[in-house]
Image 1: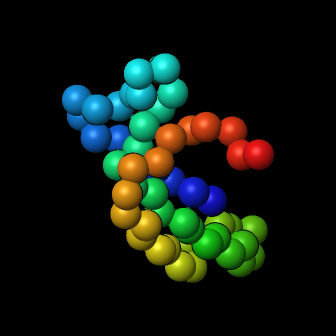
Image 2: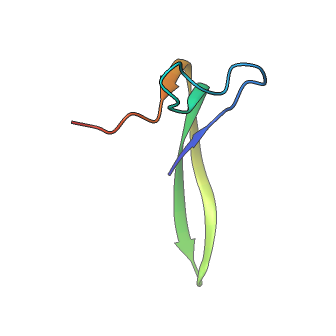
Amino acid sequence: MVLGRLIPGRMRMEDGRRLYGAHYQLKLVQTDGDWRLHDMDYHEGWVSDAPSL
């Protein structure tokens, strides 16, 4: 799972795409039917919701 962090005042690029001030890559593990957070990595820098090629 990837979680993006929105920064107030700078939430969109000029073309309307969402802009995130960083993102976190989360690893979830299912145990006994429940999902639990297993690991979380922080990645700084601006990213957008542009589709991957």
